[in-house]
Amino acid sequence: MVNLKENKHRTEHKQIESIPAPKRAYISLNQQLKKSFSPLVKAGDQVLKGQKIASIKEGIYSAIHSPISGKIFSIQDSPHQVLGKGKAIIIDNDFQEKSVATYLRTQKEIDSLDAQELRAIIRETGIVGLGGAGFPSYIKLTPPRPIHTLIINGAECEPYLTCDYRIMLEKTEEIILGIGLIARCLGAKDIYIGIEDNKPKAIEKFRSKGQGLKVKVLKSFYPQGGEKQIIKNITNNEVERGKLPFDSGVVVQNVGTALSIYEAVYLNKPLFERVMTVTGSCLVNPKNLKVCIGTPIKELIDFCGPLKENPAKIVIGGPMMGIAQNNVMTPVIKSTTGVILFNKKEAQTTDEEPCIRCAACVRECPVGLMPCMINLASIKQLWPQAKDFGALDCIECGLCSYVCPANRRLVQSIKMAKLEAIV
Ligand code: SF4
Ligand code: SF4
Image (cartoon, rainbow, N blue to C red):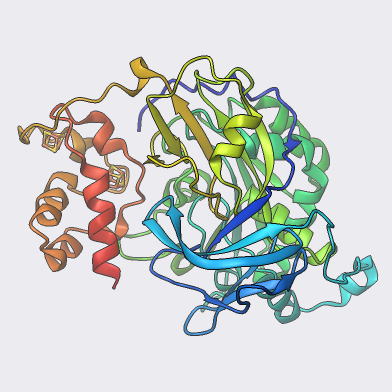
């Protein structure tokens, strides 16, 4: 656990703004890794805003909805923030804003929904975890054993990112309603929201409005927002290696997910847009933005410009867990939390050197892994060995790479091992 320079000052005081929908949206068919969605539309089809355009039917069900009305231009390879490239449904915006017929549910209707009906709405509206994982929420809300504790994650411990902080300030009531719906799905009686002590205004808002919600003030350090870390720090229970939070009767959900669940149930709104942070020293006007899924990051950068200087590195996500990009046409997917533009000095990279066996990565790993050993196994493509060293327990926090004096690309190699070991 380390104290990182927060660098949240550029956007933490900025209200969420909506960026106009893109002329052309690139809706990736890989919203969840290793799971490709099947398109439900073809080139030339007209689509409405909110229309379901792709789904996964095998295994874990999920759905993607169009963020705009318009015409399907094509379904073809496009840049992807994690995979490099992958199939996307490309939609030309007609700017007519024609939506699927919908209605707002009344409080009476909502009160009469049972847990199964709530989960069905969350499933059909394509809600996924918005903290970065992108895992379908209805699965987490259908645990195989009883859940006594729900923890809402408002830590946002990654430097630079402020989108969760802003929704906590600007959408407090909606998040609280969303939390109530999640608790109903789970039958959880103990409900906490964990917020780092560097966000006193958010703590105050939830303390004043969240009746029955226990507000836990967490110390600011990285990675406070990791699922197992926040469970330990709030309940003092440790989730064993190889186990999941529900094995301990706990479910963790991000504040952004709670907001999306509110919108799905109360407003009947699928997840086709999200709030994210666009920031970095290269931008004149860094912002917190409400963005349509499928918007190329170039449009976000232009909206926050002009540039003070050309970025030497563009990262999607936070600086610790994010992924460097080489194509500004890469579109936003449901799990995109931010875009950061680093200048030359900040982006300075050094060559990878041989491991000096200092064990710094082992000491810092918050889940007790040996990153150096997983790295070796991954380099040699020994996937079963990487799995034996606990690759699947890695929370991809990036701390091992951060502290390594030999600049080993540990987290990248561990991510690769995780992907290969899962298949
Ligand atoms: S191995 Fe994974 S969990 Fe451990 S420090 Fe590295 S990135 Fe974080
Ligand atoms: S921190 Fe780097 S140099 Fe030290 S043991 Fe880990 S991989 Fe090797």
